[in-house]
Structure formats: structure tokens, C-alpha cells
Image 1 (cartoon, rainbow, N blue to C red):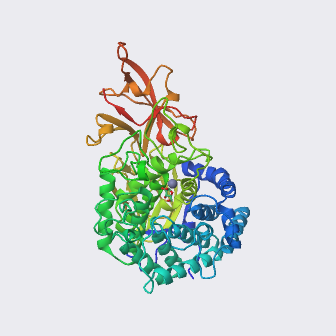
Image 2: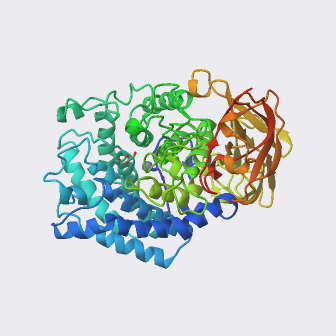
Image 3: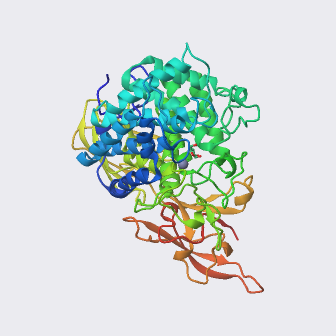
Length: 615
Ligand code: FUB
Ligand code: ZN
């Protein structure tokens, strides 16, 4: 059995990777912006989440299933909420050991174990509600729940050294190998994630069968197997239309598609399958260039929670599910490890700050499932998920909240990697990072301030420091030396303990022009500063300013002003806009103030827009 304290996505010793994750204790957020988010996660989101697991019946389902009789509550995949919470609690425990949180995890783990059947099968809702196992592969989510269980079990083992949940996971994984491995039958489930879970379980236990099963699931998908169950099923929705190596662009249900791609990237790394990495790189590029919102959000359609066609990116009806952004960050991370290309770290930055973070209130108590880019005055709160309702404490389908919790708790893991050459910094986070023969402390006011101070704590001879220079960062310098953007700047002087390196990223306001193939934003611009996308919120404007009547002048002048103060050091943007006259009134100049998009809807919910039409 592998030792504890490995990274949220560890890799096996012979994985084919350019970069390697740091150990769990070797990437620590110690202050600044993300530390505050983690504090809210610890103090509010995670304890609230536990209460919701009780209230929603998700935990009770395990107790009822242990008796074998009784009703199940919640959606078919209710177990996954428990597993995601357990994963969040484990990463949180690793970050900041807390005996109460450990006791809660272990108690829930016992409850989970009580429902497991003697042959390892475990899915409480199917056990209680369905007459048959694996009877409806498209919809029953048994492997989806299993995948989240595996991720939680690995997290618990890495974070606490305990094998309680890992033993349960191993029994279920062995059962899956018997059912669907070489001696079993081909199987495609409607909702991927088991692929990532199985690979991580392989990394933790060394059991090769788990990796082989993940590889089977990756290859079996896209061959229309689900049509054997029901010829009417829409294979696109399930990412089952085209085999992974032939897919040109992710399609269908966005969360399913990106989870699947992330799992395929794991398999590719562990089996040294470079053609598969290349296929996934092409798919990622197609997604990023034609199906991704400026915020990083993914999934344009409410119908089927799905990717739209290329350039189908409505702002007002954007779905952009929080889980899809989380899954895309997981995929980007795996592509970064495989390729070492800075564009994947750029993606992680945008996804985390502009697509995942808006999914949770700054207090940590409410969540957006759907992340719109435009809310009109008098918008109808037509469904629970509509932005017009503001963030909600929980949802009937509660996939996003615990997904945010596990991501925030483990966010430091995305910040740095190691290689034979040294240490690479990908995300600017105040904290301590060690690997590749270097140990550094990073201090920064990022994402509002573009100065990043790096102090070398320890250095082995010849170890180099690689620093990502985001593609947006024109004019960046490292120790006063100009460096190119969209790549890694290498500090190759002989580093020693006590050395200091300073990165400066200029952060002027950038106006991003809407792609003219996207009808919804043709002729409009989005404001960006550093890594942050900005939005206009009604609450920051004078009463007579109408957001939907604002136009961006040809040459706006932006002043940086204090932000709403919801986050320490936040920066707002003030400029003179043109308000279009209506009903015979003339156009006029008005003062407009924009705030970071992730801060929106934290002071009540009202009209908001990211894209502003040009005059
Ligand atoms: O199907 C499980 C989860 O529920 C999906 O990932 C979300 O999109 C929501 O549909
Ligand atoms: Zn979700």
C-alpha cells in the first residue's frame, strides 16, 4: 500500500508525464486570497454541507440500505453528494487537521460501509429503489457514484493515512473488475467519472486491474453501446457517439464530457499513450476556441446541460454549470502534467477564478449551479437554478456545492509541479511549495496585484525555477528582465536559500472583443484585468443607469477604484460609458463601475452583464 500524504492527483512512478504533482504537504496555501476562500470553505461550506447531507436524506439512504428495506430519498445519484463531501473533508483535514472533522468523516465512512453488499456492490438508491443492478446503464449512475467514492477514499487515505474508506472502495472496485473487466461484459455508463476514480485508486493501491478497467471504459465509450439498451437514446448527450480517439470536440452533457476527457487523460498518462494525449489536446483546443465562455464557463445549453454547437454561446441563457468548470480544471491539470504547456495552466487560472469561484458566495454559504453572464432587470426566476434567484444554499440536484468544497479545499494542489529540472509555479498563491530540489515561499496580492515575491527556502544544486507567464501578461518581468508571455520563464541562475525572485505582471484593463461568430456578443467587449473577468452590476451604478442601455465608448479610460470590499484588496474599474437614450431622449455620458465577476450577486442579486456593446 502506498504511503499517505500524496497529492490529490498523484501519479505512479512510471507514468509518462512532463511535470509531476507535488506531495500533499508540499503545496500549502498559507495566506492571501485563496486562504480566505479556504477559511470560508472550512468554517461554513463544509459544516453546512454536512447538515444538508442529513436533511436531504443522502446519508439516511445508507442507513436504510443497510437494513435492505425502505424508501430512498433524492436523485438516483444521491450517494455521490456524500462521497464528494467526504473528499472535501479529507482535503480539508490535510490542510488543517481538525479532530472533529476526522471523527465526522470516520462516522460517515462507517455508515457508508454498512450499506455495502457482501460482494462489494454499493449504490444505496439502486439497492432501495430499483429491482436490478446495472439495469439502466444510461441513467442509473452506479459507476458515477463509484467514481466519486474512489476519489473520496483515496483522499481520505492520503490525508489521514486511514484505510477505512479505501477498503470499501477496493471491495467495490474488485466487484466492478469482476463484472466489467476482461472476464466480464462490455459496459458504458451514462455518466463518466469512474475512469478518474479507478486510475486514482490504482495509483493509491498499485492494483493494475483498476487501471486496466479504466482503460476499458475509455475505449468502450463512443461505440454506441448504450443503443443496445435503448435505440432511442441520444448518444451525443452521453459522449457515446464517437470513440475518444476520433472525437474532434467535446459534445453533449458538459460535465459528462469533461469528466470523461479527464479520465482519459489519466489513462493516457499511466499507459504512456501519447496518441491519446494528442487526441485530447485537439479536443481541448476545439472546446477552448469555440465552446467556452470568456469566463471559462462551459456548456451553453440548458437543455441537456450541454455544449452547444461551435460559437453557440448566449450570455443570458448560459448554463455554464459550476461542475463543468471544475471538471474542465481537472482535465486541464492532467493535460498540463502530460504536456507541460502553459496554456493549460492559463486555463486552470481562468476556470478557478472566473468560472468555479462565482459558483460559491464569498461567505461560503450559497451556490450557483448555473453561471449566467447576463441577468436582465425583471428576469424571471423560472427554475431553482435561475440566477434571478441568486445563489442557493443547496439544490435538489446538489452536485455543484460539494464539488466546490472539494475543489477549494485542494486548490493549492494546482499551484505548482516538479520535474527533473526543478520546480514550476503555475498559479500565484501565497504559500509554501517544495519539489524538484527547490523549496519556496510565495507572497502575493494576486489576483488583484500583479507582483509575486518568491523567496527561496532551500535549493539543491542546479535546480531551476519555472514561472508561468500568463498569455495575457504583456510586458511581464522577472527580476526586471523582460519575459515572454504564454510560456514559462526560467530562473536559471544558481539559486540558493535566501535568494529572492520577483515576478511583475502588468495588469492594465484589457478589452476582449467578442468573436463575431458568436451572435450574442458580436460588437461587444468584455473587461478583463489580470486574470479576472469583470462585470457590471446594477448595485454599483447610479439609480438612473440602465445596464442594458450602456455602451462602451471607442476609447474608454479606466480608473482603478476600490472594489466592493467583499474580498481584501479587491479592485473595481470605473469609466465613462454612453447610455443610449430611449423614447426620444438623447444619449448621455454616465459613470459606470465594474467589479470582478466572481464577486457578483454577493450583495443581493440584480441586473448584471459581462459583455458591453460598443458604441
Ligand atoms: O448527473 C449527475 C449530475 O447532476 C451531473 O453531473 C450534473 O450536470 C447534474 O445533472
Ligand atoms: Zn453540478
